Image 1 (cartoon, helix red, strand yellow):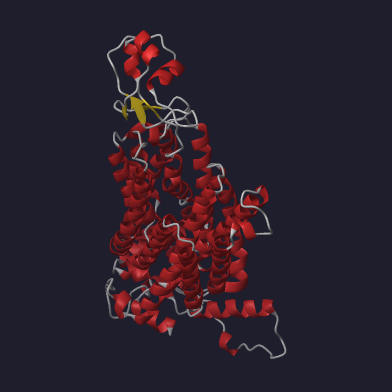
Image 2 (tube, rainbow, N blue to C red; image 1 turned 90 degrees about the vertical axis):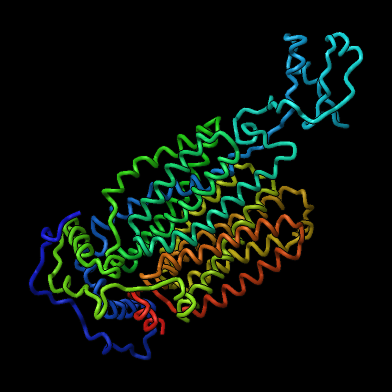
Length: 575
C-alpha cells in the first residue's frame, strides 16, 4: 500500500454545495423524473455532512481502484456457489448389489450376469434385491446350479455398482441399505455450519476488520473446500463441509461490508448485484463440470483449483477505511485513501484528511448487546431476520418441490442459474425506480406468492388436468422457476438494503445475525416438507410472508442516503 507521503494534497478545497433546501416543487408539477432529480440533489446535500462521503467524492466514486475492487469479487463468488451446491452432485442415484465375489473363487470364468443370478435373491417383479445375498457355501459350482441357494443374509463384503458410470459419495462410501440418511446428514451439517459461521464471523469481521476476515475465509476454502477431494471417510467429508460452510458465509458477509463501505450511491448497489450475478454463474460452472467429470474427487480438484490464485489477495485487497477510522487507526485509513486516490489519479485535499478524526473519541466501541439495547438496531435486525427467514424457507421449499417432479438434476441447477442472472440485473432498474424498501417488498411478495401457489393448489384441480399430465408438470415447474427468479432478486436487494440500514461499527455482526434467520428458514423447510403434512407448509409460508412484508414496510428508505458509522449517528438518522 502507498504511504502517506505518496498522497498528493491541496491546501485549499471548496466542496461543491448548493442551497438545496430552498428548492421547491410547484404544486402543479408531478413529474417523476423531476422528483427523482430533486431526491438526488437532496442526497448530495445530506452527504456534505458525511466527511467520508466527501472524501470518496474526491477519491473518485467509481474509478480504477473501485472497479478493480469489484473485479476481485468475481472468482470468489463463483467458488462460493461451487462449494455451496456441490453436495447436489455428490449423491447421484445408484443401483447397488451385494458384492458376491466369493463365488469367483469356485469358478473365475463366471460372467457378471451369471454371478448375480446365482448369488442374489430376486424381488417379486423379478429384479435382484439390493440389500440381501445368499449365504456363501463351500459347494462346487454344479451343486450350486443344481440345488440353488436358499438362506439369505445382509451384504457381508460391501456392494458393487455394475450399472453406474460415475463415481460419487454413494458408491465411494457405500451409502446404501440403511445408510441413505447420511445424505440428509450432509445438508444438516452444512446448514449447521452456516448458522455457526453467521454468528461467529460477523462478529470477527467487526473486530478484526474486513481484510483479515476475507483472507481467513479464502484460507478456509483452500483447506476445507479444495481439500475435500482428499478425505478418506464419510465423517471426514462431513467435517470438511461443516467448516467450508462457515468460510462461505464469512466471505459473503465481509465482502458485502467491504463493497458497501468503499462505494457510494448507485455504484454500491451495482457492485453487489454484479457479485451476485457471478454467484449465479458459479452454479452453472458447477453443473457443467459435474456433467463432464466422472469422479467426485475430480470435481473438487478441478472446480476448486481457481481458489489458489486468490492467495494474491494478500497484496491486492484493501481494508475498509471506514472501519479503520472507527477503530482509531487514522493513519492507516489515510494511507489506504491516498493509495486509492493515486490509483484513480486524483488528489485529496489536506483539509479533508484532517477531518477524519472523530470528535471526542479515538475508538468507537460497540458490542452484540447493542442489538438489544438500541431499539432502532433491534427493530432492523428483527425485521430483516423475518425477511431472510421467508426467503430461505420459500427458496428451499421450491427447490425440494422441483425434485418431486422428476426434473433432471442438471436442469434443476442450470435453468434457475440462467434465470437468476437477468433477475439480479433487473434489480438495477427496479432500485432506480422504487428504491430499496419497495423493491424488496415487491420481489419478496412475488416469490412468496409463487411458493404459496405451489403448495396450496392441489394437482388434480388445476385446469382439470390429472396429476400425471405433462401439462401440469410443465406448469408447476414454470411457477417454481418464476418463484426462484423473484427470490434471487429479493436476495440481492436484501443484502444492499440491510448493509445500508446497519451502522459500520456493527454492520458485519448485523448481517451475520440476520443470516442466522436464512439458515433457520432453510432448516425449517427441510423439516416441514419431510413431515408430509399439507397444512403446515402452507401455514408457515403464509405467516412468514405476511410478517415479513408488513414489518418491512415500517423500515426507512436508504437510497441516496449517507451511511451511518457510529451508533450515535445511526440513532439520529433512524429518527
